[in-house]
Amino acid sequence: MNEAIPGARPHVTLDEELIFDRSGPGKTGAELPPLDVPAISAVEAVGGDYVRPEIEGFPEVSELEVIRHFTRLSTWNYGIDTGLYPLGSCTMKYNPRINEVVARMEGMATDHPYAPEPLVQGCLRILGETARCLKEITGMDAVSLQPAAGAQGELTGLLMIRAALDDRGERRGTVLIPDSAHGTNPASVTFAGYHVRNLKSNARGCIDLAALESAANEEVAALMLTNPNTLGIFEEQIEEICRIVHAKGGLVYMDGANMNALVGVARPGEFGVDVMHLNLHKTFSTPHGGGGPGSGPVAVKAALEPYLPAPVIEQAIDGSWKLNYNCPKSVGRVRAFYGNFGMAVRALAYILAYGPEGLRQATEDAVLNANYLLHGLKQAYELAYDAPAMHECVFSDRRQAARGVRTGDIAKRLIDYGFHPYTVSFPLVVQGALMIEPTESASKEELDRFVEAMLAIAREVEDDPNVALTAPHTTRVRRLDEVTAARKPVLRWQPTAETE
Ligand SMILES: *Cc1c(COP(=O)(O)O)cnc(C)c1O
Image 1 (tube, protein in one colour):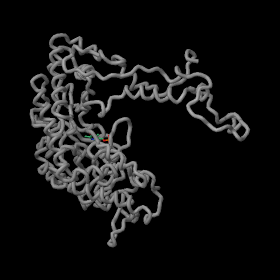
Image 2 (image 1 turned 30 degrees about the horizontal axis):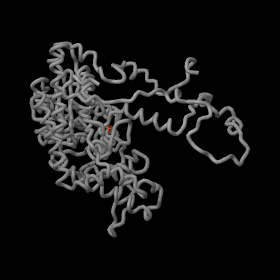
Image 3 (image 1 turned 120 degrees about the vertical axis):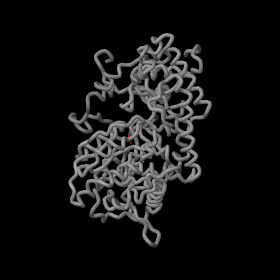
Image 4 (image 1 turned 90 degrees about the vertical axis):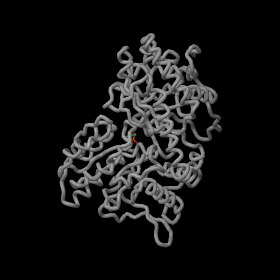
């Protein structure tokens, strides 16, 4: 720990070795009753072909050793429960524990997706009510909860756009995307069989209307935009943008991953958006990171409703809920069953517990917090675009780069101050981006500590750039070879001659 750093609260991690190092022959973590059948080996039981040799050498440890091992390992993980997690574009907000409790209740967690509809009316109602709330929040006409991530929601929305255009007898080949877009946008467009055409942002970091005007033509199937965009700036011309695209017969897809800045305040359905997705794991109370689960519902205007993934949840006149599989124009099923059901449970619990006023308050606090950081940091870091922030703010490392220190170095140094790094080098339109999203969860005291740490780093860079260049200094491991880790990941421990 480095007590000399003002405002620093380094994250404490417990040292721990491989579980194999705790292993000893014959140790066991469980008390099993004596065998009442003859003992046979694995090879005798299933045949030699099916027994993997590496299973041998499995660690043998006691219950207490297992518990200590994994508890110690868990201190290596930095999460929202340990401190501020200001990753921009990710909305790493605190998700109330009560929603986890609700999602784990019997009936919610154990009902079978193939159970007959009359026996799972409660579950169907949760799906139906969640969709109804999301319609209300987005101002759209229909919602599918199937897609398992934001990116899959994007693909689903694009497939629906293509189906609608096919129905009109139109073969359009291009989707316009602003240069500040999240990487999943062009990937989904390519996946859906369209060409990506980039739109340059203007000096305010927003869509350039003149550029849009000249790019929009009868070849354009859709404009895919994020609002607020990935610079944290609200596209104030959104109605005009939609008008330009619609005038040429194209549709507007809105990436709704940044809805944490809009919920309860503004509804994309009223801007002129035709289809959008939400990230329940960002905005609506499912913790994320570490690979899942995700949920990326798509919301559409009535004209696209016939193309929604099947089955569609419906309520009959007698109030009962059912799944309608008879959707001839549907783009088909995009995920097994009805999506990640537990996430609909969390989202609905969150929405109902907060109510309209609470949701609006969360949005206003998220925006206030981002602006508080923007004003606290702009004296030391160069603002990418001087516009009011919505839920996140983006700086450039230009001033620090003059001293040889880049955004990645500043992020590493931030770890020494006990904070998770912000998002590094994204969006790509900003040189050396520092993208910071505090969310509504951070208190003013926590924001002040974060600002203090970032200002201290900026001073260090002036005094001695080497401090940041060699950071982190207070962690269990120092700077890692991230390129090799990404290119040649070793995901599984295997015995080597040395350890055997
Ligand atoms: C997170 C994010 C996505 C992708 O969502 P996933 O659920 O990770 O697939 C798309 N666009 C933006 C702006 C995002 O922040």
